[in-house]
Length: 137
Length: 137
Length: 137
Length: 137
Image 1 (cartoon, rainbow over the protein chains, first blue to last red):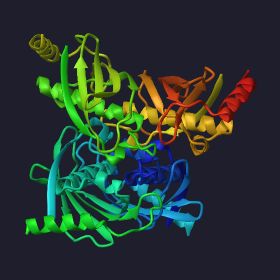
Image 2 (image 1 turned 180 degrees about the horizontal axis):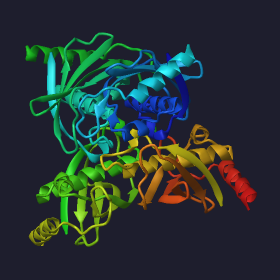
Image 3 (image 1 turned 135 degrees about the vertical axis):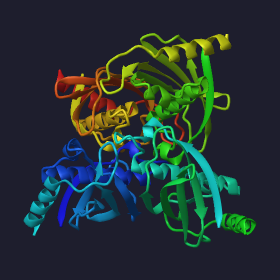
Image 4 (image 1 turned 90 degrees about the vertical axis):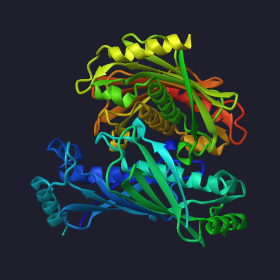
């Protein structure tokens, strides 16, 4: 299991007239979570794209337990709990302090830049995942 | 089963640097789909809010089969396939012509404006749903 | 002068916790306005891009007079009031019925796809503008 | 003159299919800039709203010199260069390292929560501005 966390500040832009964060915005926080997890592993997503491999989102799901509100500093906990095969699954939890607000997950394919055809995960990527996995154990 | 459809044009704003629609944007198309379904039933969401009842999104999930692209005119098909109880579940399909691009669903609570406490679906809302249901049968 | 108008429905996504449209969202309505003006002239923006020419936004400015609100059906009036030279300037007004809510303008360059270098406006584009101009006079 | 700076990471969500940041997104970075400036002065915007005063944006303008790109860590420099009167004007510059990418400004009113009527700037706000001004001199 690989797990990282990062804080995100809720902006006015993220709220709607219910006075809480618009439900779709949590996906943007998930994006920040997995981006910073990959950077922390030593392979920023931008560098994966430079090798010609994209990680498009195939599926996502989100459950809102309690709303995040304007100016909250929430914590996004991002977890890779399964070694990636043809697909990469990532789980997310958003907390305000100790209070769990939101859970979610995204499933990604590995695709070739340009053609969008399915491809294998880059070897360097798998090696980094494996190395990080061992460290966490 | 109640089903309505509406067309949505993909804007530049909806795309990302993969050259396709950003995955989170489909939730905004789902919003347009259910808003126009409710309007067509004779009860615009804005009028439900005026009675003091909100329909916050509790859960959503989305599966991307094929990407929508800039300037595509996609069709959002919105379906209420279960009579709402404490929760309202809505299903969505996004097509480009006959090609299915995306499927998804949202689950909504009925909540009191201000307190966000769970409440019953407004009677007038259920009556409209029932009336529309009969018509479709 | 070339002028076209189109209606846009305000979504929940477009609002913020002030209960009005977030100021930056008007730029997305301006995008819809100019996209539909170009389509109506017979040269959709997507077809301009296919010739290898982009129209990036160099500058924009917006003045909010009165707020647009959730579920308003606002009218975006888009005007090309100057024949384009090295730059294309477009003006916008957003109305709710007869009430002017917002005014704005965008200034665009013509740029080569890939390099982003400044280029001349495509001849076919200028001819369409000229033809539309004469019709309006 | 009061000046603060903060870094913002460009997300996939912020890009469009030109491969650069969508022009309207800079307004969200400006929002982050002024929010953190106010927090740093000791008066977070959320606490101003709690006193019943809003600072809606009346006008904004932005000039794009060079594009920001995915995963860039850009610096937003936010400046209050005029003591606020009936209106508050804020200036912004966005840099990538030493390279200036974007300039902009927003003009805000002071308005009463609920009625949106123009009101005076809160005295505590003006005192903080004055105190910060002296410190910078």
